[in-house]
Image 1 (spheres, rainbow, N blue to C red):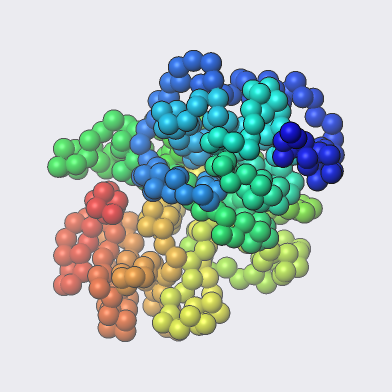
Image 2 (tube, rainbow, N blue to C red):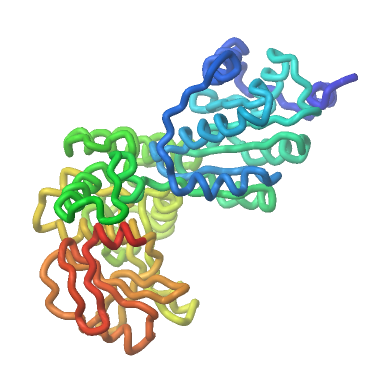
Length: 430
């Protein structure tokens, strides 16, 4: 009896690779990265908050998609789920494959070579395929959709170093077949866990927490550079995250003629975090069209290198039309010692750690740094002395938020109905 894969070959529904791929390379990749097939599988895993959230959805039929910046721990989470399933599924039915060096490989080829070398019938039994760096494969979304529909007995977990869905059609083609989870950099709570520091029940002193917060700023929440000096962290972030996304990852997915323009746009936002961006002005400065500037900024946002904040309004249409602020997702550790820039750097960390989506600014330029919705919360960010709370009070009178706070670097006090909270305490209470 012909297997489904063989039938697809027979009727040419399976399209071979456009560029011949050495089968030995595929076999070697399968055998070398699936060590649990041959013996004990050891894994040193540090708990992540997102892990429990993803685990709830693992039994569902849908594809699990892990997205996010490079080096945030997506592959480690995949291997954690490998270890979880070893107790329930035949170990050779759990398959990991990275497409990092296999851009021209078809997804079906991986299934075919696996079933051949392990003598498996993929139409029967339970299987889990972990496809890492899947965004490298051209047309991965349509290929995955076909496999998902053809094999209801196979669970697919996929990951991408930047947004898999930087092309909108990718998400549309998998609608109803997938749950997406963004794997972010470590939160301050997670960072303390990675440092083996117990923060509950006031077990850490204020001085210790402030010192750890400074170290957290240096690593930007990237696990591999926890405890590293600023110069090492700076080089790591530039070469392993920023440059690889701008000069390699995005151009592989999208028709970017000049990646250097992307780099310039990112540096503009990096040097002026929290500024209201004038697209026309930036386009003129860079010698590109307004449409290109807008498109490239969208690419940076979709690849998680920058964050966009909308100007809050109760009218959704006004919110969309109003000017927007942009913040970098990564702060250069080399800038941390610059006292003149520290206020903006501190604001950027607070915005990113709050997962902010809105700010507020009225016609008189009165401004509140962060507005959270459901429930409505107003947050001001002050790195130094707090002169007044006038802008916050104006917002309170106009919108009546359920809570209003000021995040400071180290001050803790109450000003009327407004609580001033040190940043480390805000992060631990979040």
